[in-house]
Amino acid sequence: MLHFTAMRRKLIAANWKMYSPPEGWDAADSPYKPDVGADIVIFPSFLDVRRLMDAKLVVGGQGGRAEPHGAFTGDVSMAMLKGAGCQYVLCGHSERRKYYKETDAAIAEQVTAAIECGLHPILCVGETKKEHDAGKAKAAVKKQLQAIPLSSYFLLPTSYSLSIAYEPIWAIGTGVNALPDDAQAMHMSIRSLLPKESRESTRIIYGGSVTDLNAADFLAHPDVDGLLVGGASLEPKRFQSIVAAALEI
Ligand code: 13P
Image (cartoon, rainbow, N blue to C red; front, side):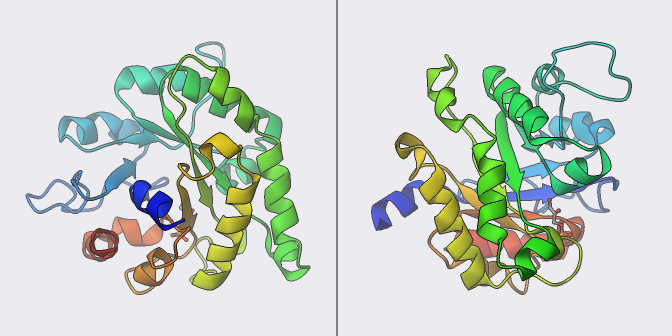
């Protein structure tokens, strides 16, 4: 188990949601820059993708449609994100599921399209407060995962590359994070559901009220391969501490 864990490079992702880049994002000592010790990926608004890439940051789209183009006012496609130079894309973030009614089926199509065009999707899963309180968190996450044809990705010509973000919905933006031990247990459960061929190589990251104060506690767990950070990623100093915690592991 240990040597497989060591194979998984830590992934620290900043989801800036519908916020502009924070002041100092492009400073000489910017914590958003790539690092040799971990993958640091920034998810800005679509309008900011270009200037972050010009500043040599590793950038992802906060979402994208599976269709390469078409009459979908207000959307961008996976192919367009790839064409613009993005390397990653978020699929199935709970805010997309909630506000845009994205279904498991649509999310499955997005993940497939992203992999086909050479983007690295981060598939977001997570249970509601109600499911959590009813002890149904693992079942809810299992259902979301089973909607994605994970095994079929081995058949695609592009190299297989997908990460999973466990983001309990009740922990997002609330200041109430999951207990790191509970996140570890969920990550193990998620890993057990992955196709055998990719089980040990797939990164499973945690998101939901991650801060500079709890990042190291999460990262100390063997199945927590990184963090997807919202609010705290908009504060360069805090994000810097989170990155530092990943580099120290
Ligand atoms: P917060 O870190 O603000 O809870 O947001 C988490 C999130 O949704 C990242 O995608």
